[in-house]
Amino acid sequence: MMFLSKSKTRAVHHYHDEREKDNKGDDGEASTSLTVWTKSLVYSCSGFTVIGSDGGLAYRVDNYTGRPDQTILMDGSGNPIFTICRRKKLRLLDYWLVYEGEVCKHSNNDMQKPMFCVRKNMRRLRQTKVDDVVAYVYCGVSENRCMYVVEGSFTHRSCKILDESRRVVAEIRKKEGLPKGASFGLEVFHLIIKPDFHCRFAMAIVLLLDQMYS
Image 1: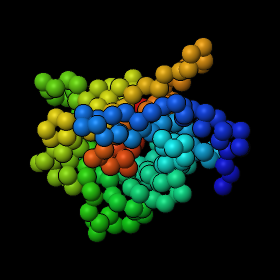
Image 2: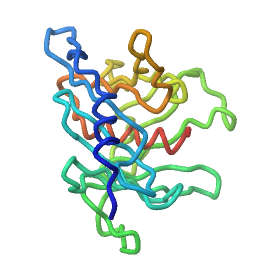
Image 3: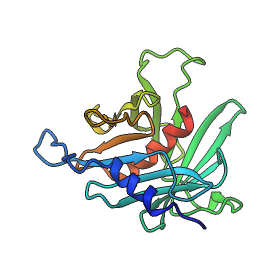
Image 4: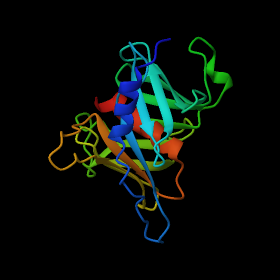
């Protein structure tokens, strides 16, 4: 396995603006700010590199195939956190199952229950009054209870994750370039997580949105 050179690693940390301060929630508690880079630190891989507010490596994704049916979210040390599996329903609708830890691609996943299921909002296939909804997050495999919805546009890096009471628990925002500096484009963006929402859960949703809309 070949990792990127030190110069490129330094470039990743350059993407993390040290002057970026934690956002404050309505209750005064600090939110967590992550800088997400849609590149892997490993050569010949697609994936993600996520820098924490302290400038350290928080999460990573290393995909050895272009668009895998299975993606593993890891912490900064390479330990698996979630396995994201893509499924097809009736050969038409895609949905994604998220398992805790690492799940072998060729194993029988029926023995392990997924933590949650995510479905893309198929606007062209059915009428909906909520045009801003891009994805639905359900508890387990059942679609009876929608825990969260994602609204906005992932393509433009402007999304909000809302809970059942319509409270924003996380946001995806564009990262603005420095004055007189180059623009970061869509490759680098911010993930802002409220204090009572899990960062790893928010990052898993980012990976799902990337598979749906990229």
